[in-house]
Length: 437
Ligand SMILES: [Zn+2]
Ligand SMILES: [Zn+2]
Image (cartoon, rainbow, N blue to C red):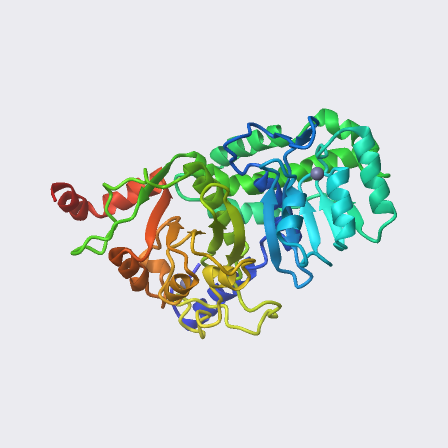
């Protein structure tokens, strides 16, 4: 194959990059995966997946939920905690905005959640074919009755992640992560969530008339593909994280390595949210760089108030905007048209007040986003990997450094241990100087 850089080559390269844009999961699958991931939201008071409602002694499984507005934007995401079921939490916190919402809940809801959903006139409720929130037969029958006499539809949602999506994701894994690491992670997730005994009874417990043997094995393999999709974002974090507070030194444009994140309130929440943001990043419209952002509010009982990824304006058709990056010099670049993850997140947040908000973002905020973050009131930013020079394109990243230096923003960085080792090795002289100072 020719390795020249003629404009013809660049056009071909751009075309192949554009095709990659399509290899991502559907929005519905993304919402369901986020709902499921929220089941793992770390709670200080509870252990494992079981969740005890305050009102009685019955055990309910912890569920995660995502509510999507009729405009296709996420209204809220949460999980069962503080004695309130996940669905009920969103409904109480966001009353008045629920009509017509699509609801993605990780497990078939109990009768309490079902009656609230029906009363709020959401449009449809989707849940995964795993054990329901309550396995009590009376609960299941009552929930079914409620849905039956209302116009609210309930559906078992069988996830589907196409093989080509997973193949593409594996190609983009950080160098230090092997397919074996992903495999270990995904098998573990599958074990935690999938109960073979349960699927035998699924037909009885879910409104699912045509679940035969062949379909059961298909459902199992589809569910497994979803676990693999999660594992791609989780496995690198499992390999070890360096989590520290970022300090910008006066004479160096660098991060100081010798300050730790001991003052950060909750490492577990941070870890959970960074994986959440990494999953969002894979939903990008940008063929080169995906960025995901989540804003969480409240230190003791963190609530997710918004999420976003970088993309073209909603409903933009393929071909309306240039898709080339600076590396594809032959074409007009996409940069002015892409709405950044932080911008999308700020625009759709479900609360105005972000004074105690924490922004989790997979890459550092650029100069276009930094003033918007400052204006929103967010004072704490947790970033994932740093941007390599080659990834920066036309964007600059001076303002966020300035804010950190001036103490306007407190910034933490979470990166995989391997990446950190590689980065440190590339700045030996800076490390030396920092250590001696
Ligand atoms: Zn419930
Ligand atoms: Zn930006």
